[in-house]
Image 1 (spheres, rainbow, N blue to C red):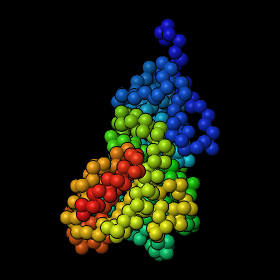
Image 2 (image 1 turned 45 degrees about the horizontal axis):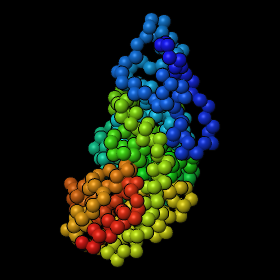
Image 3 (image 1 turned 60 degrees about the vertical axis):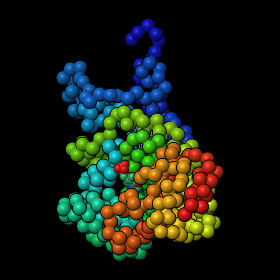
Image 4 (image 1 turned 30 degrees about the vertical axis):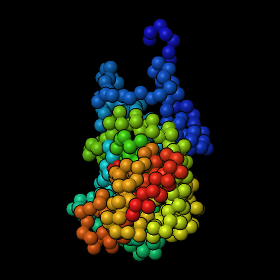
Length: 407
Ligand SMILES: *Cc1c(COP(=O)(O)O)cnc(C)c1O
């Protein structure tokens, strides 16, 4: 120790009352109070491996007598802080970080779906997740049934003796369907099916899926959790007995998050609650404005009474988020003219960052889909997805107004 009187890190976590609000947990949960050199922030542990001072330390570690890291693919203290923060926010026992949201989904499926098992998913689902299910899981002898989001009767009918998992986003992309998680949980519990919610569009600020009966909650932390359009990451949270097999699979499959990206995520989450407040307010203001606009034929936003899941949203969520999907009364050229005339959002895939982003699903994620299939999914030429950032709502709306005037 040097002559300045800094205290060494205290590996004990401060007691955190579990009834703390999400703003307090975003800032404080999971982080050691006492860091090296009296720093406030958790350091980036930029190391690939961790050394043992003698063989006794190795054997103690192997016998589970010491709580420490061994090799970078299995753990890193920077990740641990993020994992604990997420667990506190979601109200779950354990969390894991992954290199991306896709990696969280694929690793979880590989770990929890034995050969010959059955999976149920919803139709309005992230395209790459669907692709993994169709092209890879099928090769491992896993069968899948696709149901309409929110169709509880179809869900009951799809359950088989070998059904292992039910996987759905909530809200879904791009139509923002909200799953009645408590109602589905009654059915999954009775049938011994595990329910995984991809809560990327909700975040634990808007919906705590585990409290409502989900077994696991997954995120593309690339979106709201990171929040700054500057990193890719995935997360999974739930009870230890379900999370541990996935952590073991991650150690084998290797899609781990880099410690620098983990540190950026930790920093991003500190402002999650306050950012979500603005994303929710902007989303609602934009949706209301669009619904009243004569050139807009349809608005999909679960915070509007016109949305099919408005009632569920009011009951289980505390905000409807920043993404608004809408259809302009025009053709592809008109829709392109609209997008090209906006000056605040960037035209880009993704959502959940401080910068607003806008896209035409037809030219972005559905570009290579045959037209008939795309239209069957409701992806028309003039469907727009606007992901509100945290700018001023008045500016976002004024910009949309002048862009719609050019359609
Ligand atoms: C972006 C996204 C994913 C994929 O996450 P990546 O971090 O891009 O790999 C999965 N699910 C949803 C709902 C998403 O929006």
